[in-house]
Amino acid sequence: MSNTPASPTPLSYKDAGVDIDAGDALVERIKPLARKTMREGVLAGIGGFGALFEVPKRYKEPVLVSGTDGVGTKLRLAFEWNMHDTVGIDLVAMSVNDVLVQGAEPLFFLDYFACGKLDVDTAAAVVGGIARGCELSGCALIGGETAEMPGMYPPGEYDLAGFAVGAVEKSKILTGQDVVAGDVVLGLASAGVHSNGFSLVRKCIERAEAAGSVPATLDGKPFRQAVMEPTRLYVKNVLAALAQHPIKALAHITGGGLLENIPRVLPEGLAAELKAGSWPQTELFAWLQATAGIDDIEMNRTFNNGIGMVVVVAAAEAEATAATLRAAGETVYTIGAIAARGDGAAVRVA
Image 1 (cartoon, rainbow, N blue to C red):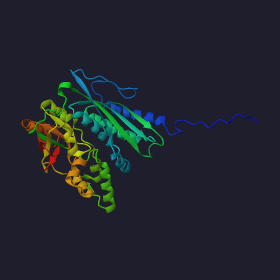
Image 2: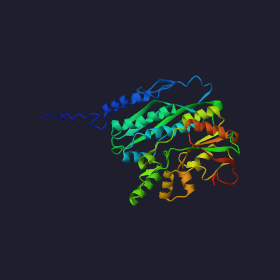
Image 3: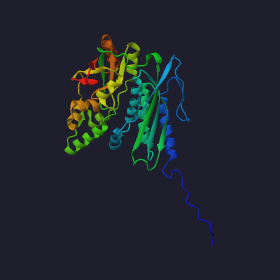
Image 4: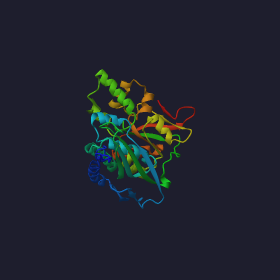
């Protein structure tokens, strides 16, 4: 009798749950989408081990500005509702809008998509949204990572992360240090909840479903579309305004809402006094507030509550700056002014 052990049944990587062919198919689907985002500075894009980018020569003293973010629990609704084509826009917007706040022009973007089992159609829809977000903000999608990791994620679920790099002339970095009492606070309308506060949004939906009171429409859109409306990309319009007007500070209204984000760009000793009712509350935010049963303070520190970007300018520049932004397509409200802080909060809404 032979003591030679029997040959084991061959196991391939696909048997272990990783489909290399599916990954290759996704890359081929992505390439034409990425090509639409190409811009000056791109030396090598999708497919290499690393993406190469040359800072445009028009910059004399370029300072690189980076930002990274995800989409948060908004993804849970994307899974449940099978709505995957706009979360990629959210992913891009969360990073490029942050980069913009420093006065920087986003140059390129990298994404990370991880799942347990790769569904090429779903992944292509997500990356299609990422490419669209890059296209709308003028930055190149030059690389990323698709990770298929069996056992790490439940079927049908995935995670997203993104990374943006921008550039700004050293002399034109926005720090907020020039802000003084008497400056005007402009608010640019959001497209909806954007990508923050979705843990509470989901609780509101659960409560409404249990009560059978989910509205059919909000703000003229089907309920699910209104909730999933992607984060607004402010990049091109705000950069155009920056080229024409001496904007002093910008604040991207993300997690923490108006109350937590505006103070990040104010010098010590100053506060933003916002006028309640100076911008309208949309049906979506009114529904969230009523369903959650929360007060105005909680609304303004949980959600953007209708204002996705804040622009601080001198009073003499406010009207012209607002006109430029409106002409570019932004909905602009004069929502308050800068004042001495004293012993009060850094943002006061009254």
